[in-house]
Image 1 (tube, one colour):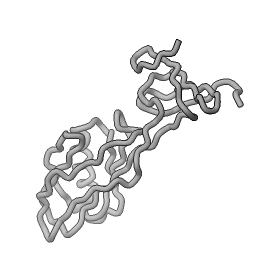
Image 2: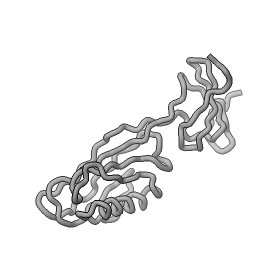
Image 3: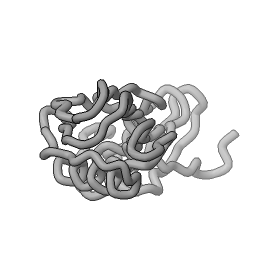
Image 4: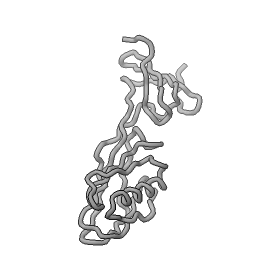
Length: 173
């Protein structure tokens, strides 16, 4: 009997054409251009809007402001902000979707909701740098059985729900 319903206590088997994939965390790049000297901006993700994010010429302060704003609308460190080419608050910031419900999956693009930066022609843009790839059956419980119907192998999910970590069972060739 096959059980293909996700949920607590449901362990498969799940059927997949090919080996399960671990998935890839999406990376998006926020680019701050022009010559900002102050002001604020807001970002939106899946209809949730951040509060005002205060721009700062101090990279660590700007990154902390962005991180706090993203944490408030998703979850702590679900989206991690790190410096790309950031110098004095101008350049690129990498936004890596690596936690909670946004890890190991394709996600929607963050949107610049409001640009209230001051200075000489300050701009904000977001682009997808690394597309996310959804892990096979990422939301099933640890211990779930996945059957590779193409290669005739069985896998056990060894990672927690929301991840894509699998081990082939037995000595199948």
